Image 1 (cartoon, rainbow, N blue to C red):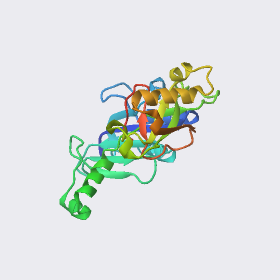
Image 2 (image 1 turned 90 degrees about the vertical axis):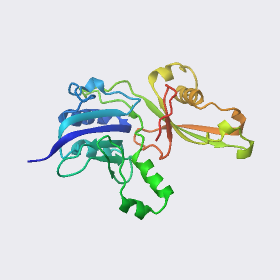
Image 3 (image 1 turned 180 degrees about the vertical axis):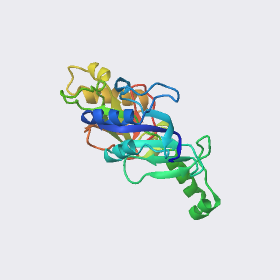
Image 4 (image 1 turned 90 degrees about the horizontal axis):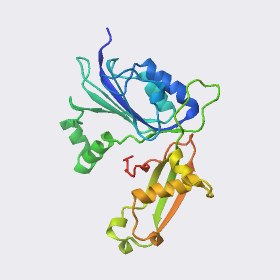
Length: 255
């Protein structure tokens, strides 16, 4: 008899619309819901712009193997939690879209545990904090990009576009105001159709919409002190590691 426990997963990253039917099929096959006691997931519940939370009780081995394999194959980030049983303890699995899946022991409330052997292995507080930070990975929004095949019966919600904004300081840090010193870096901007529509008729409505979201989310004291480059990201391109995610809601989402 296979052990079964409650488990949940949050998924994010860039998903080309052509893969949406397969993605939805895997979710439905797993019997997942958006809420612990909710109805089974429906295709029309899939949308862009925020991480996709899914959950179920009585999950075999506490894993969603076909769905997780799909995420790894398509560089979709996820964090999966499962309860413990007689065969294993509660754990959190973290996949950032690249590299290996990392497993972290957790308590019943999903708090990360660290034992004496692990503390001794790391040897210093900085390494321990880095370990805890990696366990607390913030899943980015799920971005559906592109257009599904006309022959496809499962239509995705209106596509969103992702832009990568690179911000550099053109002056020495000492010349920046205190609130501006954390600005330089990479930002992943979620742009939906409504954002683009507000800039119809301009040379590049997508990039102008991304700039609007950036400036609304990251106020800058003096624009002359910064260089800002915006590039539209292909649906087939994994998002750059370390990028901070921003949406039209003007809320930074940790990468």
